Image (cartoon, rainbow, N blue to C red; front, side, top):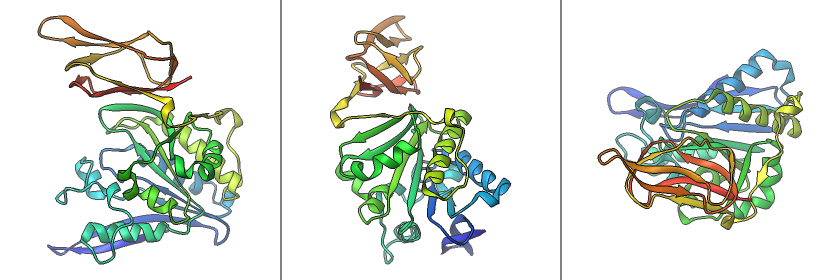
Length: 308
């Protein structure tokens, strides 16, 4: 059943709406699948499709409630903009919102209120257009004890326990977790694209989580559920940053185990035909982020390595 989460009048006889697909058997636990917060992140659109399709094909296996929110920022998705067009806002920096605030603050408040009280929220993101990520769940250190057991049930490639930053306090995940609604942040792929295999992998993980929670009456094929690598602490990730401006070229894909001293790629000069810098791995580890957009400036992020 398609339901309005919030609906507000716009200036020229139009309406701004956030909708959800409410799938329920009338009892049991509730899980919410949320995506489309950033308009240039499209992986979650396919995940929502696959989950809705799974329920449509086997409604008898639903033992609880699945709420699917495919577009928290529909204007951004429609225009392929990361933030909310015309408002110059990052949707994921204004939660929990304000019922008496501006239009977008009111929207954020209504979304937050609608999600509050769920037994689990999965907040799905892609990377931006510059970086490519392996499927991962990101959890702040302050919520790790509660959330890591849930994340492990998803069998995702990597669980990154990271240090909390002040800016994260205004995200949807932080707002929900700090008020007792568990929320996992999943990230994968690259901005503006859909990776079918990554999306299916995440759906298998969500199905396993729903089965474990008693929401779905069928477990996925066990071979599809990996044993996740879990980062130990915020210092276990090494960042690769460009030492010079140029064009970054590499033949290495993420989800690759690399050795200290191994070449990750080169920064080259199209003008002179010279290699400006050879990007070298500072440690052994799992390359879980790699630069997708080749143009770089000094300081640009080229990759992330989980230290093994």
